[in-house]
Image 1 (cartoon, rainbow, N blue to C red):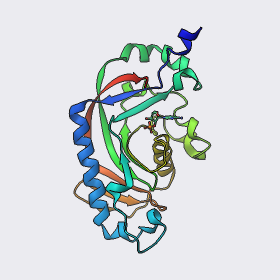
Image 2 (image 1 turned 135 degrees about the vertical axis):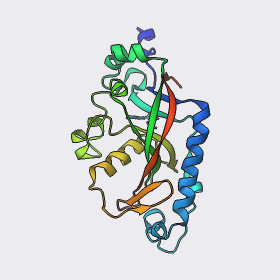
Image 3 (image 1 turned 90 degrees about the horizontal axis):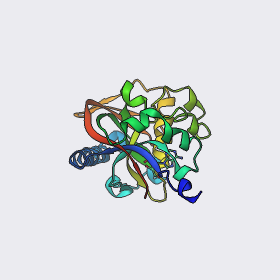
Image 4 (image 1 turned 90 degrees about the vertical axis):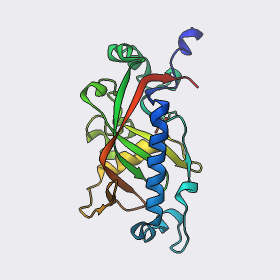
Length: 218
Ligand code: 2AM
């Protein structure tokens, strides 16, 4: 009936607690500011602008997100594949409303998105959907062969006209590439360029972010 159809959320995920949200946003802003001034980044500016000489202000380039979260299952109010099964999963029911610590281990940017990579614990992986990576196979053919949880991330910002679902795709794309040996050591960690405007900063100190496992109806 109609009640059943509307009882599933838009998505499930871990929602960063308000106190950590600001800290994560500040770190992301620092990252963008630093990147913007790096000669290495400037030499690949055309990836973002299409023109070699044109400058880009990364803080303006991305539309920052406010309600920071790490999506586990996109249910689309029940229309998505496996939504109902996910909602009925005993681990999901048991963990609903509980707070755990997310480990943000890297920051990445592409001409489309900026995000933080989340490294899930074994316990957190119980809440990760079986098709989490495979779903992105049409965009990233190697996705299905990456370890479960590879797609886990927090979307920090999107370029104009880009939907946030792109962030996980961008992350999987970076992970599917061979990691370049050359890295720039920075205060926050090691920065690597993956071509086509894709950069990843592996954090020396992961950001530990408390988050509540819950769902969003919109
Ligand atoms: P995100 O997880 O990269 O931020 C509402 O749109 C939320 O669900 C967003 O957080 C978004 O991306 C995520 N989302 C939207 N469509 C999705 C999809 N097809 N698969 C996985 N996550 C999706």
